[in-house]
Length: 303
Image (cartoon, rainbow, N blue to C red; front, side, top):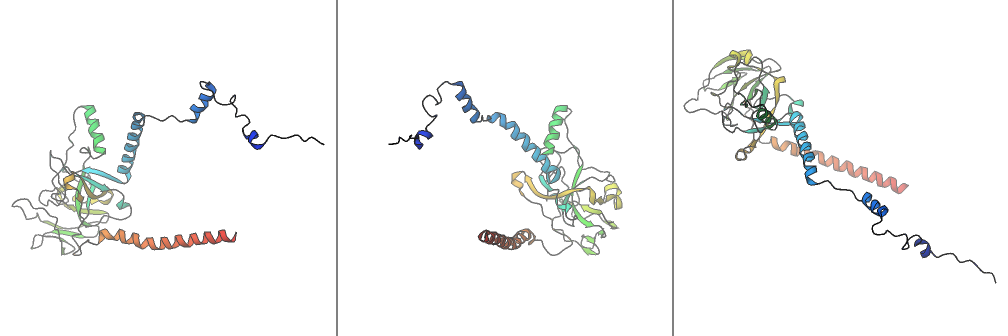
């Protein structure tokens, strides 16, 4: 009879090296080091908070520099569309800085722009502290729309664009563009003062804008700046963006209207245009997605 050497069964082989001598021992520095390496140490909330604040500030500055920015309305020249007065809490308005990268400013739009060099009257004086640190804090707050900016930016409504001729007024006290009276329901008349100051016809050159305030007799605009005429025009390149929404105070949350005074057709359907385009684009996108999935499945079946 031949003796056959018996090899260890699978269970014995699997348990090899797992005996009591090989198991982690309490207090063993080698095993505790392995456990420490395997377990990541979490940062405390107070260490992460400054990082989160810093990232949020950087994102906010990026958005306000390239996409949208909050502006303070410091004067009453756009009453009652936009509320602002010296020494009071003026409206904070979200201005779209991206829209005019894809198109030109149009009549009726409320825009924020840098005051042209030909404009000799300012509606705004920054209230800055003589204390350097406090003044710095005010500048930081201005970057986020929490304080008045230290630059002379202006907000007005576009009345006429390049190539159009504007004048005032017709027999019914209306501004006229290219011989047609404007429809301006947004005009605010002060008590007992509902007659506009007349001005002679002026043809707006290409690349320029003629702007007026909604508070028609309380606004220093294209009619008066630099003596009026060509000096009152605003270069399109000076436009920072289009006023979209009043974001503060909460009691005045609303959109900023851009009624076209040169058209009798209302823009009531315009807010639904992007939604309609979205639905229109959704159908071909879904159809194309289904075709791609079917092609991938059929390829897999052939393989």
